[in-house]
Length: 246
Image: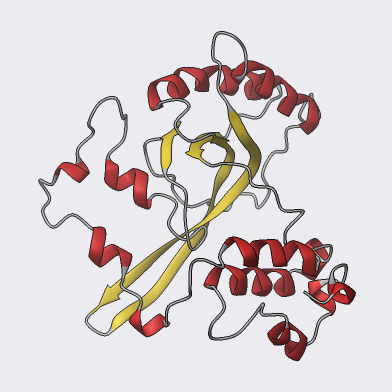
């Protein structure tokens, strides 16, 4: 990369500059293109993303050449179990959820969604309905987000739990139901799901049983802070260095 661009912000670049730097284009990895679109769509939140940061992501996928969208096989058609009796729909110990749910639960969160290990709600949430009087009662948390996060980290990394986590973040997912017919995708209906404490654990360091057993303590911490309508979601994810790229 041209050193003059290292500290330049993605939101300040022209389309020609993005193409020149290899951040957009037909031969650029979809993950890189998606990041550019996300940054440009939300400059008020992501204006700090620089060319050097995105170049690190680009190098990460440099050994994974992009495929033409028309030639990319549909992962659902490739992996969806062919029979309702398939073992992919069955919970096989030590797992606590099926292979199918683990693989597809977070589909749509990225081009390479993480596998779900365990979640505290095994029933789907209904859409958020407008209250009868137009306003929802507000409850003031008795602790700051930093204090709550510190308590959660202390709980899951205790000697009793020993969870090796790589990230913790509060998120809300937009849940979309797509009606598919003979002519392809039809109408899309969606709603905003509940608050999720999304916790990544280092790959191959724990199992679903240990994470299930650690979950009630987290819910107790949140309840003490008057945070009750919340889900705990566990997935596998590792931390990768995004500096010193060559």
